[in-house]
Length: 245
Image (cartoon, rainbow, N blue to C red; front, side, top):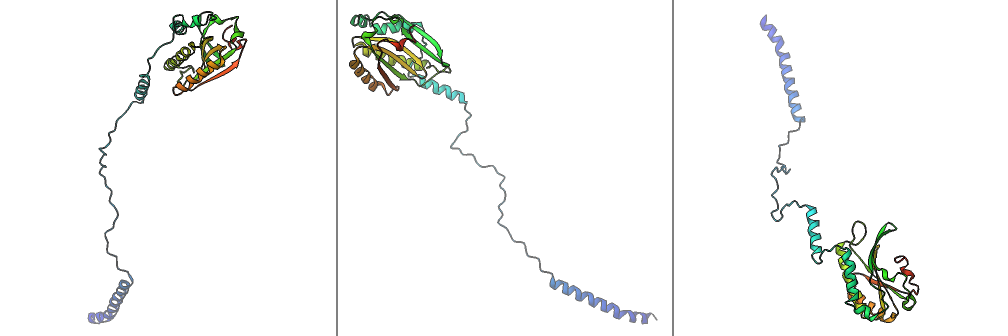
């Protein structure tokens, strides 16, 4: 009886086995084969630090030191001086030249130079003026007014020329006064520093001679500072009313 049972099960089992083999063969044909892995050209990360450039050195510099060094270099051409009351005495010596100027022009009333400091339109004005010309009685005889002015470059915080610029301007003013000393009948009244310019004030009756001398001075020293001048007839000396009153 067991033999009959095995005979009945043989054909179903055989058919099921055949069906499984056929299905597996078909699935193998339809599934694509996996591609083999190939090497790629993706660059690998380099974790090593780049070599420093030995041509340059990294230096930490204090910028304040650079500014101080530049300022010191710029100031070596000129000696730092501080203007005080002695400047007035020196101005008298320069103009008088041991009596030469006053002897050539007896109409010079004196050398009473005094400093003047004030604020005009919120800007500082400093001047050194000869107060001997206050209420001068001979203004009509010397009607030609020369205002020779130098442009100054370096200013302090208040807008006035700093001590180095004052040294340069004083040097130019001295040379100008000495040049005009050789011309008779020239009155040097003084100078003022205001709004970027130094104005050097003269009165004379020798218009052409003084103008030629000023033109020559301008050509000689214009490389140091911008120099120009104004010339006008002022028989009442009204341009000095602001300074001498």
